[in-house]
Every structure is written in C-alpha cells, then in structure tokens.
Amino acid sequence: MHFISSLILVSLFSFLVTYFSTPYVRKLSLKNGFLDMPNKRKDHKIPIVRMGGVSIFSGFFISNLIFLVFSLLSGNSFFEDKLFFIILLGNTIFFLIGLAEDLKENIDPFLRLFVQFASSSLIWTLGLRINGISLDIFGNSDYSFLFPNFISITFTSIFIVGIVNAINWIDGLDGLACGISLISLITMSFLILPSYAFLAFSLIGSCAAFLRFNSHPASIIMGDSGSYLLGFSLASLSIIY
Image (cartoon, rainbow, N blue to C red; front, side, top):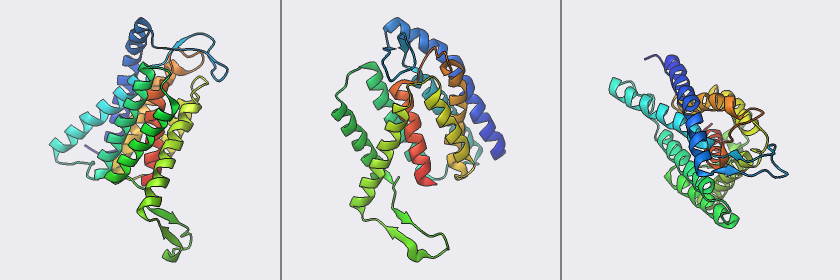
C-alpha cells in the first residue's frame, strides 16, 4: 500500500473508531457516575462525563495495531524504528495513568507527579531521550553540547512531564486542549520521519472525531487519560524531531 494512502486510511480509521465509540463511552460513564464536577477553572457549569480519553485512545491504538499487522504481513513495514514502539508504549503507560485518575478522583498530587516522573524515566531508559542541545545554525558541530546521562534523564523527564501537565491544565475550556493538540499534530506530521507520521495521523483522526462531541457546548471531556495521552504524544514527537 502506498505510504500516503496508508496515512489517510489510518487517520480515517481512527476517526471512525473514536467517532462511533464516544457515545458508548459517554453512556457507560453516565451510568457509572464518572463525571467531572464544575469549578472556576472549567467552562462547564454542570457535571460532565470525563472519560473521553478512552475513545481517543481506542481510535489511536486500534488503527496503529491494524496497520502495523497489515504492514508486517505485506512485507512493506513502515514501522522499522524501535522508537515507534517505545513511543507507543509510552502513550499506553500515560493513558493508563490518566485513566486511573479518571476512575479514582482525588489522587495525591505528589503521588501523581512521582508516577509521571518514574514513567518518563522508564521511557528514557528504553531510548527516548534528549541527549543534548544543538546551537548548530551554520552547520558547525562545535556548537552542539551533549549531556551526561544524569542531565539527559532529568531534562527528558521534566520536558515530558511538563508537556503532559500543560495539556492537562488547559483542558478546562470546551475543545481547547483537543484543538491545540490537533493543530500541533498536523504541523508535526510534516516534519517527522515516516514511521512516526502514523502516530501523528492516528491521533489527528481521533482528535478530529472527538471535537465533534467536545466542542462548545461539550457533552464529554477527554479527562486525564486523554490529556496525558496527547501530552505525551506531543512531547515524544517533539523529542524525536
């Protein structure tokens, strides 16, 4: 299958999965009382379902899994870089962290922060790293500075956790976090390597579908699971770029 066609199909498939799964996620969440209560930081004035990240992740993960299997069976794998699987693992880990917070509110913020840093450190050990800073704007390698491991893991963890929480904190207005993530992912998709483009396009499809339900007046929000997933995705794609 042609590469561009594959990107379009993975985006379309993730869009469809998220679009049709969101009403079911909302219905199930209402039944079980998984609601986000209004406060001064949030736009909604009444309790609203907070489990939208489940439908975003469903579209993202299922579409990547299907096209990964199809690509491997066809012998034309676009997924040859191990960092693809590291990022996919990181997406899953941060989604699950956020899901745990959505299912059980009022988790201690210091415990939450500790788990985020521990997960970021794990991803660093697997190979997703900020290895240094390059000031090479004229093609001179003398302007590149490599970090020792301690500095590298510290910078990487702070960067990932910072982006994750930034997306989480702006998820107070209808469509804001999802819309910003969608625009960022579209921009990144033109800059990153082909295998990582599948990650971006699958999330583009999921975010576009979710905005149908998350735009004002929103009937569902992505919750911590969705914001953590998108935050880690933006952070990791920025690092590999």
